[in-house]
Image 1 (cartoon, rainbow, N blue to C red):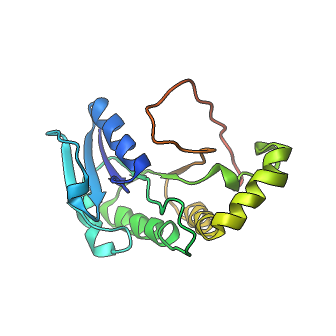
Image 2: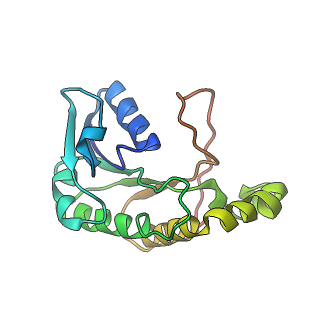
Image 3: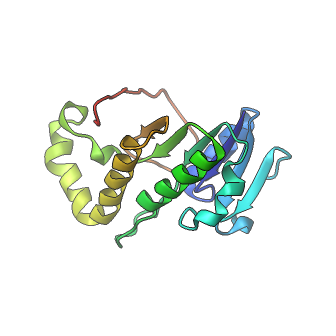
Length: 179
């Protein structure tokens, strides 16, 4: 399998690249700073580019089987369009190349209703949204762009990400209807 990884130099993206290579996949890794990718493997191709620069995305997606977007801004508080505009640009490049599907990483703080505990809904999420609201606003916009697209898409909403090796078991909840 050949996958493209946008955001390959970040904490999450670098783990995605390592795990994909560990599973024997061919990986194209998009990087604004190619030198930041330290992994070396004959199945790894580093593609210089930026999700906010559509002209750089064709070489990333051409001939791959799937795209994973791990783009992000970390804990910055400044407004961003990297999630929404970056995803829109990836979807357009994928459509031009005839590629499906796309997997994006969002945030568990966007969970609603019974997906989150009362403590999360009443205390934790409002606090996080107060601190990092610009990021969450753009993530929600990204999810709306995906929902309105014709793409085969999956959004992953982890409750939190740490820069450590995978451990334990994970559970997944499949949602429908825009949840």
